[in-house]
Length: 352
Image 1 (cartoon, one colour):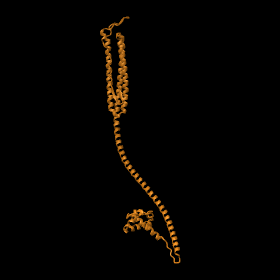
Image 2 (cartoon, rainbow, N blue to C red):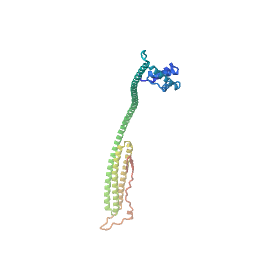
Image 3 (cartoon, rainbow, N blue to C red):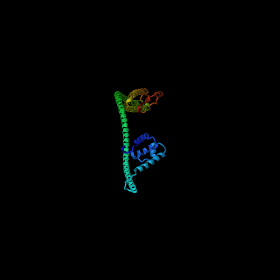
Image 4 (cartoon, rainbow, N blue to C red):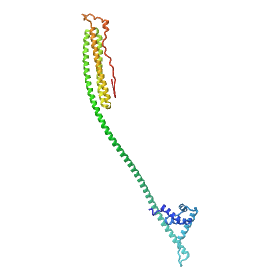
């Protein structure tokens, strides 16, 4: 295709050779006209000649082009010479042959132009195909580079993930070991808690039995000490309320112990802190037990004092009981000690 169509590069090379071979400007323009018309099939024009040669003024290619066309018409004219043929008939025959040759040349030029246009269209289509192929190749190369970069990044990411997985596996093993240790500690604390709860239940049962015995003694003292019946009833009521309150507190503390145990199992990181909190609660329970024992002792002392202040002779018949003296009224009764609330804060659970 490049051999059939005029090539600008080859044309420029031919003109450069003509410039070297023909230093004169008019001769150079004449040779360029012949080169364009006969070799490359291009109709020369004054502007085209001046753009290719770039010598002289614009009048020089115009004058040389006129001489070229006149010389070409003169050379293309056909002369028929025959000794018996009249001159005017010979001229007419020459004109006819010239006309036929001109028309044949024009027809051949038209066919050549059509062939040239077809070849030019094919060349343009081929160039477009080459451009599209090059664009596609560039896109493929770009995509390949992107895929290569993505593959390298993925490989780096895979290595990072493998390293992170190994570190995570080691960390998980360490955490599992720590979890086993904390679970063992929690199991030990749970056993201690169960033992403490059982001891607390036993102590509470003893306190309940002691309270019942104290209540029986109080009822007996009511019969023996009619003068102190109102005071003893009030004391008994207070003791019963305090006993109920102690029972409720014990139940609440038991529920608090269960919640604390569940919180310890859920919060492994705070196991040591929870154990300390439980130890504090156990100390509080023991202090409570000691306080309850002190209350019972106070009740016993109150009962002893009430027995001492009882009248020496029982009332006979329907006689009214004597009014209590100043000394008997001055004997104080044992008041239950006020419970001190101890607040133990645990993560996520506040109990009294």
